Image (cartoon, rainbow, N blue to C red; front, side):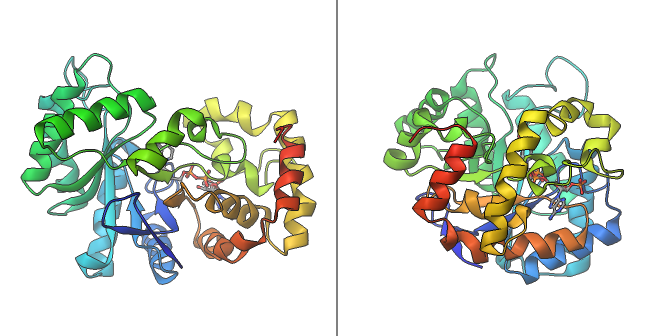
Length: 322
Ligand SMILES: NC(=O)c1ccc[n+]([C@@H]2O[C@H](COP(=O)([O-])OP(=O)(O)OC[C@H]3O[C@@H](n4cnc5c(N)ncnc54)[C@H](OP(=O)(O)O)[C@@H]3O)[C@@H](O)[C@H]2O)c1
C-alpha cells in the first residue's frame, strides 16, 4: 500500500481506504464488519470513513465496537464521519450545517464511535440556508475542542469551498482541507474543470466515493440483478435504475477485455483507474464481504498499467473526446 498526502495537509492516507455505507449493520453483522476492517488494515488501509446517518447511527456504533475489539493503536488509523442529514426530526436537526446541530451532533458521533476525536469531519452536503461563516466557525470550535483534527466538504460546489477557505483564512480559523466527491468511470463531473483549481492552486485533498458505482463496475449486474447484492436492497430502490441501465451495462461489458488483458478483475481495474488520477488522495472502497476486500485491495498492483493506449480505449468506450 502506498500513502498520499491529503492535499497539502500534513497527514497521509492510504491510496485505498474503507467506508461503511450500506454495509455495516445494513448488510454485515458485527463479526463480518470486524473481519472486513481487519482485512483492510492488514492490507495497509489507514483510513476508515463513516457518517452520522449511515444505518441510522448503527454504522458508527459498529465501527466503534470493531475498533474496540481490534485494539489498534489510535495513532495508526484515521476515522472520518460526516454531518448534515441528521438523525432527529425537527427544524434545526435535519439537512443543516447550523452551529447548534454541528456542536450537538459531533458529540453523538463520538459517543457511537467510542472515540475522543475523529480525524476528519466532513460536511456531508452544503447547506444553502446557513451562512458558510456560521459553519466555518462552528467547525473551527469543534476542532479547537479537540473533537476533530481536520475538516472537509462533500459534494460542495467549488465556489462554496473557496468561500469557506477564504472565510477561514480571513479569521485565522481552521480551514477545510479535503473534498469527498463521487468519482468513478461513469461519474467524473466533480473532477471536472471547476474543481481543478481547488486541487491545483489551493492544495485541496480528495477522498473519493463509489469507485465501483455501487458494484456496477464489477460486472455483477450484467447478467441481471444478483440476489443479496446492493441493487436488491429495498431501501435503495433509486439505485436500481442505474444498475440495470442497458447503456451502462454495455460499457461495463466493453471494459472487460481491457481488464482481462491486464490480468485484473473488473473491480480491480475500475479501482485502479481512479487511482491513476493524481488529484485523488484516497479511493474509498466499500464491501459487504471479506472476500471483496481481499480482491479490491489488490487493485493497487494495476495502477501503472493504465498506458495512454488503455486510457484512449477507455475514453472511446465512454464516448469522451480527448
Ligand atoms: N460522501 C458521500 O456522499 C458518500 C456517498 C456514498 C459513499 N460514500 C463513502 O464511500 C464509500 C465507498 O462507496 P461505495 O460503498 O458506494 O463504493 P463502491 O465500490 O461503488 O460499492 C461498494 C459495493 O459494491 C459491491 N462490491 C464491492 N467490491 C466488490 C467486488 N470485488 N465484487 C463484487 N461486488 C463488490 C458491494 O456491494 P454488494 O456486495 O452489497 O452488492 C459493496 O458494498 C462508502 O462506504 C462511504 O464511506 C460517501
